Amino acid sequence: MAELLLSFHCGAADAGPLGELLRTASGAPVHIRAEAVLGHDFSDATTAERVTGRLDRRVIELIVADEQLTILVAAVEQARRDAPVRWHATPIIARGRLA
Image (cartoon, rainbow, N blue to C red; front, top):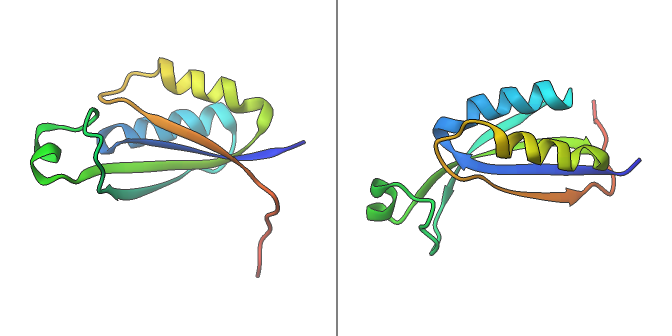
């Protein structure tokens, strides 16, 4: 079974609810971290972000089986959100735990 690192980039206000949704839907541990984006595409930006030129985003990451990809993306798409969400999936080549 192939695994993916599934990443969702969302607004700060949406991170908590989406993280809970993904944890419930996937059964996988969910990691949320703050991310400052210095970009050129401000179509998802608030007024304050457009003024500063800095997008305040959160990244939600989880490792899932590739069969879960479409289900989880659809769940986020249907979820109640304040802002658009961008996502990508990256294949996991190897992983482990070092004690």
